[in-house]
Length: 333
Image (cartoon, rainbow, N blue to C red):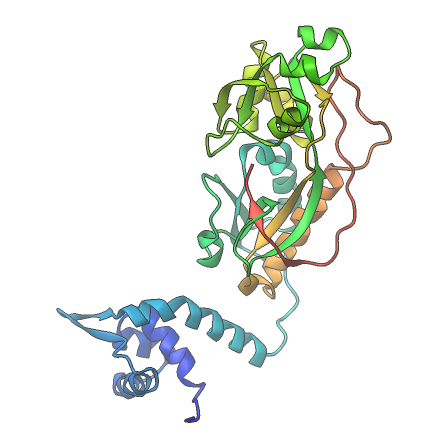
């Protein structure tokens, strides 16, 4: 096996990122002729042309496109290993925009508190809250999203996670709904009309499985994209909504006049986590952002002594300690 010159990695990263020998040479402070010789060495090492003439410019080969993201990550990790420890993070002077991807229910509950805490510590920071149309690791991998908020489930294996809080599903109806007039049994609950939130447009979920085990079935009459939408429908109709407990905590400005109640059937616990790509693991500013989000969420979703009863807004679920970050699987509700 021929020896590998790791000094070629930064050059390959620059060439694949710039798509130009001249631009790559300028980026690395080399002459164009030196970069051309380096490209020739890279072609010999990889057994691929990498960049080929296309009109007046250069176009990447399929092999180059395949290598581009891998080389970028490997190069950054190598530079981080071989660089001295960074200076302490200067929050007062930090000017950076962080993009967080979360659903509407999370934003309603936590966005204002996160922004206030961030600006208190780092006045030059900006937060961009992005929507979550689908579950997809690409935005994290490509750096378009710094932090994603999601439910632990099936996702990209390399992504890191840290638990924010544990949640449970509750029922929600308008104040004065007939369902609240007596103890809520599985039979009475199933007999109502229901509205559920699902980005995939699914009418079926864990509650239906729990009811089916009792020989019961509910009639879901509407599916909406988000939990706040389900609460609005419940507030203005006789439909019963299914929402996380934390969503009801933020419901004051979304669906006034809504009461939450404990479901008469058992449903799986919801574990909401912060998710990030491992290439951001050692970045001091990103580490600060992660700690900020974890602190704000865990502080807001604090333990309460009483368990909820039907007919009122339910208290938040307790927060428990979680082991150190580890790879996970992500799913969406």
